[in-house]
Image 1 (cartoon, rainbow, N blue to C red):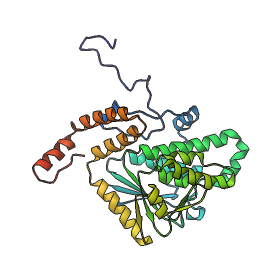
Image 2 (cartoon, rainbow, N blue to C red; image 1 turned 135 degrees about the vertical axis):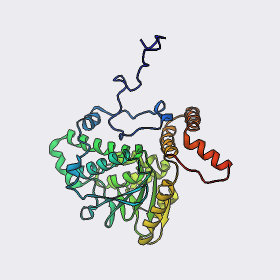
Image 3 (cartoon, rainbow, N blue to C red; image 1 turned 30 degrees about the vertical axis):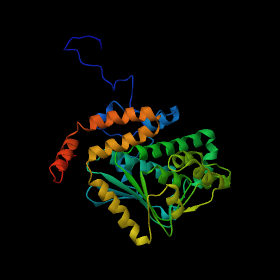
Image 4 (cartoon, rainbow, N blue to C red; image 1 turned 180 degrees about the horizontal axis):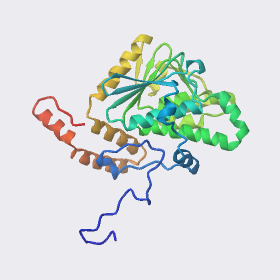
Amino acid sequence: SPSSPSPPSPPPSSSSSSSPASPMRVTTSLPRCLHRLSRRPCLPPAARGLASEGHGVYTPDEMSDFDDILLERPTEGVVKLTLNQARKRNALSSHMMRVLQTHLDSISRDKGVRAVVLAADGPAFSAGHDLKEMKALREQGLEGYQNIFTQCSILMQSVVNLPQPIIAQVQGMATAAGCQLVSSCDMVVACAESARFATPGVNIGLFCSTPMVALSRKVGRNHAMEMLLTGEPISAQRAYEIGLVNRIVSGEGEIEKETLSLATLIASKPTTAVKIGKEAFYQQLERPLADAYELTSEVMAQNMMEDDAEEGVSAFLEKRQPTWNN
């Protein structure tokens, strides 16, 4: 019995079958100060089915046959993923999303990765969903569309829930689900000359409802509504002004340097603190003010018990550089 005082009795497990882990979240071990605080997203049955049946990822053997997304390690602690379907304007087909999901799941378990850059080859960052595929799905009826939009929603939430910060490096157009992917990243570096952002679904009779979720959590309501209702693209400068973009870089050759510099800086920070901070940041956004402070007060208190926090405080007081354990 959970209430039994007998010492030999093991405590009840918080990860028992009464509270199964959500299949949506990428697999990773959370810092101990967030185990008790984490609130996993609740998925509809269709989403749980897709994930639990293994439709969201490819096996390592299958992945060896694909070059749709290139993976590089440009510097210690940083992984760069490059969408590599320039001929198709890096459209987020079901296959492309599955490849990206597989990479994210793998990265989430890689303790050597501290920051991620998401870039794209060609004149477009991503044109969003593959409209030829979307048209063909009509033969499957409502279920076919439910499945692909659920797959996309799982992918976008995996970007947000990735333990490592992820930076979008945007050159060219990012439209519809492509803009959604950018908006889901933690930070965005854009090329001043070529980067454009749009949610143009309204122009073809298909309102960008799922991109709206990510966009409206990144920019103010009125700016999001203007993009959604007009379908007009905005420049990198305008995206910076409304808060969608963190940094603008002039010149195609400079954006990679700027993005890598930002990723390297983040990768130099203690992994545990960054992981705790990213998780808590998104959790507190969803809560009322008092609840947000209750959550973050507990997070900070338990964060202080981490070895890296002790080392960081000691190093500051002793006027030396810290040596991080994680």
